[in-house]
Image 1 (tube, rainbow, N blue to C red):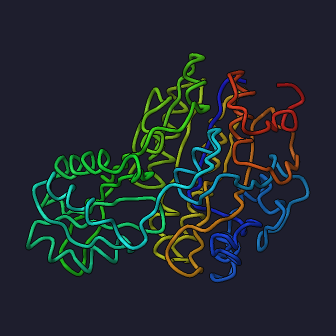
Image 2 (image 1 turned 60 degrees about the vertical axis):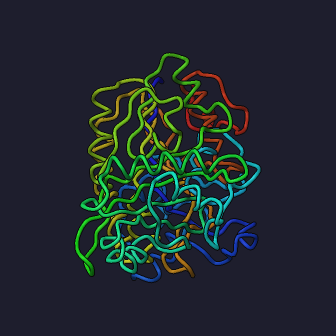
Length: 391
């Protein structure tokens, strides 16, 4: 085996972790509560792989003989954000949570930022991105001041109308913020949030860009690239890893484009690692607490799954998982601390294998490393022996 397609369903959690009380997330269950609140869901292709057979899943029937392997994973790192989840999937254990600023950024930070960009700012508080743009968008257009905001995640977000502040200038502002937010103020991500439209009908565009810290150590991406494999990042994966260990990257406009680009990369790169993030679940529906939209997006992604499965080569392994939860029925508008699903498929995968509950997302990294025969980060435990008669 010499190719892995790793598909991240961003924020599709499947039930609160045992330590959810430490995060204020007792009762969170992204998939389960979407099903309950919307009256059901149709995910026949993931169901066929074994989604309904995973421990704790409610509202999706188990099948007698799953066509793939199935299980769930806990998270050992301290956090429930995008960066922590992806880095753990890639083989790192983040012991210290990234800094957050739920009450806004300190005066000294904002003074440095405003001086460096040559203009004042608006906002500087925790908010939903769509909400703060509606609140401050008109003032931003009148004054030219960018909107700065954060959330419960470790993020410094800069929003600007594309007709007021050019994309290149917005990106440069984020580069400046990235340099400021280091050391004692080290945030996981600086995010450019361009938008268009008029007051009352603003819309964020797909030209969002994330500026991350470098991973805290070598990941499965680094080791795969060092072994001579192509490591292909689809969606925001390149941003999350700050380009480290990635040999080819393509950004996407939405979930459907993410699947389209994954299919193109499967045609272009017959070996190596294709690492895809489908962000709409989290960005468009989880944070906006839109259960119906989330359900529809899941059903649309599931309907495209046969295209991926039909184009897999005999030596391929497909792993479908998530990076955290974002229960749209839960309080607030932030991520939730949850188990994530694991579904694995491929010609050589032992059908109906129950992978159980994994201790860490990094078990995925260890499995990828064993399949590709590359160095392992040492954090997780491979389940390759459970998937195949011979690796």
